[in-house]
Image (cartoon, rainbow, N blue to C red):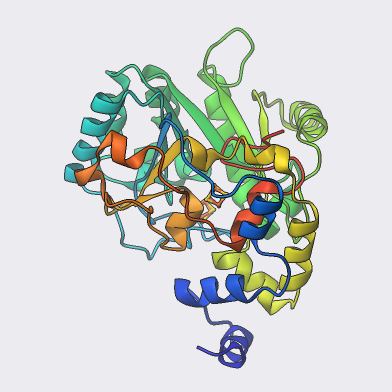
Length: 348
Ligand code: SF4
Ligand code: SF4
């Protein structure tokens, strides 16, 4: 698909969900490549170490359709992980000694086997993280018990809230999302999440509303804590700042506004070798809804599978998947810019 065809598609409000087209834009970026930057900082090639985190994508179905969603999730998506694939994940968790299991989606809670999987995980010695979009908790009666369910199963909750103001959050995540998120945060606080003296962790996630890098994580956390406490009596533990990667819906918005190159230049100029040592792909394996393996959630969305003879969770062999070369492309600049970025927030 030529760039002029893509331009006219975007002008008509259509999507470029074809990952080959997205990868072509990334490789056609005329500035420095990510591999060149790694070579200059003596970090090439990137090699994975021991697997500490298994990140599992339970499906692309979501009750929201956020503007910057890198999963391209929404209510009309049908991709969903089966219990059979979940069992293959549990087998790997038992055999490899994974420390953290990070459940994501879409809205992971919408998978019909979500609660079964969480209960199975809570029987094991792993830390369980659920990336909840908050609004799912108040979207329907059948999800109202989730705060208590999370508590009973020792789950850590990580939730996106791109701003402490209604206007900014709604413009990025949809009308009404802010007020429903606040409602859900109250329910989580009520059972003890985010409260001092409990071990029930509740972290919030910030990502910029446009083509800019996140501000300093600690200063922004201070602002969030003050504003959410004063305005809504809400408590939480930590704020994680995450950089928008130029893929999926965010790439489309950059191309539509003709700011793609400007944003890439910004990421490249802010390349920080210190962030490379803490990249999440060095210690994570990401499992797609269909059991395919990836170095991270972003590579998963670009359909860049692992560089290993082992391609799926069913074939998983610890030794073969550890020490693999990480598959990189120019979207990776989003993880090494400024303070660095990953699913756990800023790196340095
Ligand atoms: S809530 Fe998360 S998964 Fe759902 S559309 Fe928004 S960013 Fe995507
Ligand atoms: S996008 Fe994925 S593979 Fe690339 S640097 Fe970031 S975590 Fe690593």
